[in-house]
Amino acid sequence: MKFTKFLPNLFTRKKPVLIIVGPTASGKSSLAIELAKQHNGEVISCDSRQIYKGLEIFSGAVTPETSGGVKHHLVSFLKPGEIYSADLFIKDTLPIIDMLHTVDKLPIIAGGTGFWAQALMYEKNFPAVKPDYQFRETLHSKTTEELFSELQEKDPRRAGIADPHNRKRIIRALEIIEQIGVVPAIRNVTRKGYSFILVYLRPEKELLDGRIGKNVSQRMEEGLLVESEQALAGLTHTQVEELGLGFKHIHNLQAGDITTEEFATLITREEIQYAKRQKTFINKLFKNYTGKKILIESLDLQERINQVSKMV
Image (cartoon, rainbow, N blue to C red; front, side):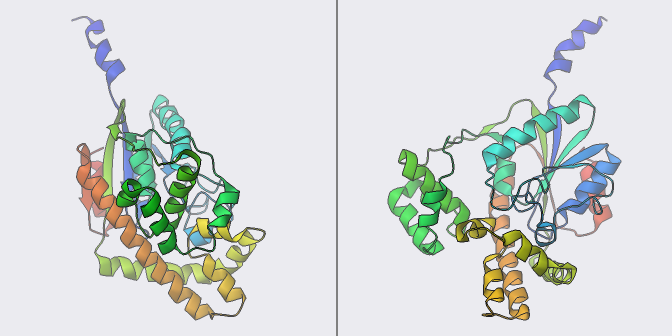
């Protein structure tokens, strides 16, 4: 039989991409590292909080010391205050994925920003609207509830599918409306040429909450406060708010309005609320995805490795 008979399959075969998502403290990084070691892979971060350098303790970003020798991409590469979006994430990520495939490595996407993972899995036509920092500053004094009400008034369709607690996305929507009148509807079309394997880590709430509390305590001991004060120097209020991560409480701590213990309590509470929002979004993403996928609730690392390895 002639070899040429198989050429069409060779050129049309979809490229495998492993995507590990889940709420904060669910163990995405440790699983990604071990899978990369076993399957000749490299990790691409899909976390909007771990892109900033100088905030590794606060964001829990992987460092050269904690990477296990595995190459990581899109971690700690921007200065705090710089803007990064799902559109830029896609533009940076797809070339890395293609490069890894050319050298027979498995791309492993890992992170808690479900919107970015969704944008990678589906071809989305994002509106070409550049950030307007002056406009964002005019929104600083408004509460998130007030901003969402404004979004409901100006674009009810977009408000109907938006997270009313996600201040950053609400501001971005208002920014787009300010420039082009409305947030365009985006149709989801599965990205061609890739075979995505979606892994959703979803530990039980009680266990996850406990892990979040331990993470906050550990990061406080590692120097979270000193790191944060250095990173926030020179940033505007709006830039601080857009970083998320509970940074707004740093100013209250510095002003003496709250104690260190109260700061840790507030951060823990916000992280738990953030995890809840992450799960809401990823639940829907996981439910709607029709490709290869697996939900893992166990916290045992070896069990996780075994389950995912069967699909790779």
